[in-house]
Length: 521
Image: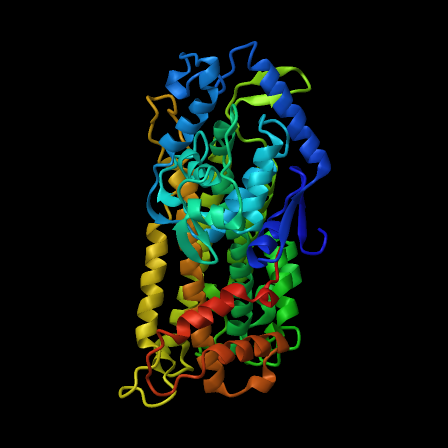
C-alpha cells in the first residue's frame, strides 16, 4: 500500500486495509491498471453479446419477470428502473463508515472483471470514495439474497445523482453537492444497475469493521482478565502452559500465552506449590481461610476466551474471501465466452459467520459482567467494600447504579443472540425462497459490539476502583499498571457519588479506538 493510497486489484483487499481507509480520511483508493483492463474487456464482451443472445438482467426482466424480453432501446431504462424501484429502504441510516466500506467492497468485486461494467462506472465509484461522498443507506430493506439489493440500490442512486449522502458529517441532497464538486451524475449502461445492487457488499463491509472491533474487544477482555487475576491474587495455574498443551485448542493456547506475557512481572499472582505446602494436614477436617480455587470467570479465562479467539479468526478468513469475490449475477465469463447464471449473491456465508461472531461477543460480555459482579459483591469477594465504594458505604453508593447498566446491557445483547440467518422468509414472488438476512444479521451484531464495549468499560471502571482500594500499584504487572493509568486518564477515581453520563461514553470511545490495546489479529 503506497503512502496515502490504497491500490485496489479486486483480489487482495484485506480487513486491515478497509479499517485504515475508514480511520484515515486522507487515504485514497486507486484502481490498478491490470484490474481496469479486465473491466474494459468484460464490458466490451457484454456489449457485443447483448445484441446476439438473451442475457438475464441485460435484455430480460428481473426475478420472476425473467420471461419478459426487453427492447433494444429500453436496456438503459431497465437499469434506471431497477435502481429507483429498489432504493426503497426505510428506518434510520446505517453508520456512514459502513456505507464507505460497502462502496469499497463493491468497487473491489467489480474489478474482478466478471460483472460487465464500464470503466466509467469504476471511475465514478472511485470519485465517491475519495471524496468521502457516503450514500445515506436506510437500515431496513435487505433480505440478503440477491445480496443487499435495497441497501446497494441507495449507493447506486447516489452515483446517478439522486438520493442523499453524508459529506463531512452532514446529511444532504446529492444533486446540488455533485454540482458544487463538479462531479457529473453517472449515466448507467446495460447491466450496470444490476451489477451495482446485486451482491453482498454491505453485509461484508459491515462485518469487516466488526471483525476488527471484535479483535479489540477480545484484547481488552484479555487485559482486563489479567488485571482481575492480579487483584484477587489468583493462582498462575489457570494460564500454565502445560495445562493448555494437554488440551491443545489453538485459541486456548493463544489466550493463555497472551495472559502469561501480560502478567510475567506481576508480584501479586500466587504459585500453587506455596499454597499446597503452606497448610499442614492432620486427621481432622479443618477449615482454612485462604481460597484454594477461583471461580470460573477467573480460572477458565483461556477456556472461555479461546473459542472466541478462534471464532473471530474464522470469521476474518470468511470475510476476506468474500470481499475479494464475484458476488453478482449473471457472471460475465469472457475467458470461456459465456454468461453463468448462479447464486454467488447469496449471503449465507457472511450471515452465518456474523451470527457466530455475535454469539462469541455475547459470551465475552457475559464473562465481563459476571466478573464485574464478583468485584462489586463484598459477600463473594470478601476483600473489597460493597460496590467498590471508596468513601462511606450506606451514605455513598459507589458503583451500585452502574451495575444495573451492565446487567441490562448484557441482557439486551442476550436478547439479540438468536441467529438471524435462521429467519428466512420467502419473498420476491417466492423466487427468493431461502434468504440469508445477512445485512440485518450484521447490523444486529454491530449493536452487540457496541454493548460489549459498554460492559467492558464498566468492568474497567470497577477494576480501576479495586486498584485504588488496594493501593499496591507497585506490585502490578507493567501491562496492568499501564491499562489502569490509561483508563484513569479518561475516568478519574470515584469517591463521592457523581453523575458519569458524560465521562463513561468518553472512556468507552477511548477503549474502542486505542489500537495500542490490541493483542490479537
